[in-house]
Length: 280
Image (cartoon, rainbow, N blue to C red; front, side):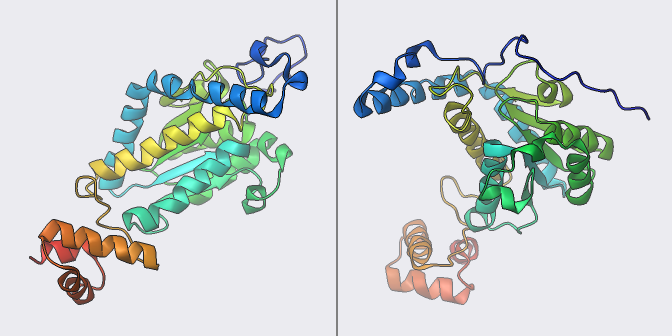
């Protein structure tokens, strides 16, 4: 199949939201440090409202993830730059928080694991690498979420095309409406956090907005999938002192017993909070 060649963007093209300049930051160089951080804090305070505007889209994607996981599917994040790093972070938190197997939620970033620690910016322009990664990590029945603030990372867009061809459900988190990524997926989540204090630095408000949405996607999906008991992380893996204290507290409070009895129940169930609570 002949690939359509994309026209390179030029300086005269309309700027996407992630590249626009913020008029409030016009005098940034003359500001004191306190003024700079106050401006940043003021701008950050606008992010939750931008996320609230897309909550119905977030809920639809979370429901799709919950349904997929209940049916034997998995969650895959595919991203580039800051967005990709946030996806890998969210995926890495799933096993200790919800007691799921490491492969249930998996994050892929353009440039591979090295890109988690250092910038490999050119990696996001490689569509073939995006296709290869999806073929490697996804399968029919999964939900694949593309992450790109600009919505233009070719690695991510190509990965979404490949995911749809595999029979996966596709969603995305981006900050540019009508972007190639938003147009490619079934369940787009398009946030408008506005221009950054540093023009184009989407690790700022766009990154914060993406993190908020990822928190919601994974947490809501796991709650809907029965991985919690109300507000309690009963499938938490108590692998350190802090988490063991939390496990003891959950069993103690849920069963109305003292700490020694809670420890005894946890010892008897291999430190499974879920089983300890069920073994009344």
